[in-house]
Amino acid sequence: MPVYIVLLGPPGAGKGTQAGIVSEKLGLAHVSSGDIFRENIKNQTELGKLAEGFINRGALVPDDVTIDMIRERLSRADCLRGALLDGYPRTPPQAEALDHMLANFGGKVDVVPYIQVDEAELVNRLSGRWTCRAEGHIYHMVFNPPKQAGICDVDGSELYQREDDSRETVQHRIHVYFEQTAPLSEYYRKQGQLVEVNGAQNIEKVTADLLAALPESAKNGR
Ligand code: ADP
Ligand code: AMP
Image 1 (cartoon, protein in one colour):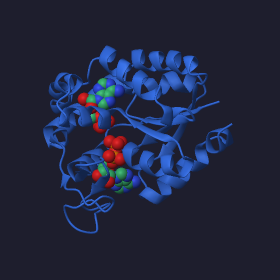
Image 2 (cartoon, rainbow, N blue to C red; image 1 turned 30 degrees about the vertical axis):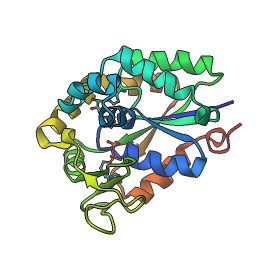
Image 3 (cartoon, rainbow, N blue to C red; image 1 turned 30 degrees about the horizontal axis):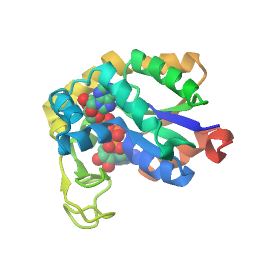
């Protein structure tokens, strides 16, 4: 059976950072809805043009578009063993749609690590985030700097600051998170899938706690 892990947490909690590390360790596809949207914006596809305005002002892209995009992504060959989802779902309809689509793929949401970080720290993290132009590798000017300023350690591409990481947009994104996404923690808690992880530790410690919180089935495949 495929294994599906959903990383939950506010913007800046460290979902993308941890998903990059853990997906590699477990050999699972890393599916980041934000990365897929940014790739589409870069290529100016129809989806990218539609999503761009929502993203730049820190709003959510409409559910129907987002759900279709994730269904298509999860049906690709590299997700046959499952996936680590980062940034999806973000609303109750997206969570319900995910349950349905995974049932069709012969799986279910196995575990939902919820990475918790205080709001003040989120702003510090997002305002110092630098992102790699080519592949979306994530850095922080203080907490996780690249070896050479402005250059990605992994692929040598340029690092940039996301437009939606400006201070005003960050505040709005955190507000949107509390309004629309935070209720999902209750949804997954009720289904027995939620595990809480303290995100206010260094990156290595968060990874260790995250791996420790995964059931054996999620670590080994089944
Ligand atoms: P998310 O995907 O949840 O929005 P990111 O993984 O992009 O969060 O992390 C946001 C910022 O915080 C990035 O600049 C990243 O380098 C930094 N960061 C991630 N995890 C930690 C951590 N445990 N301690 C300090 N900074 C972190
Ligand atoms: P992220 O890279 O996860 O921080 O996402 C960046 C932006 O992409 C968000 O602020 C939203 O505008 C959009 N986005 C990403 N994932 C979703 C989703 N599941 N639903 C709606 N919008 C999303």
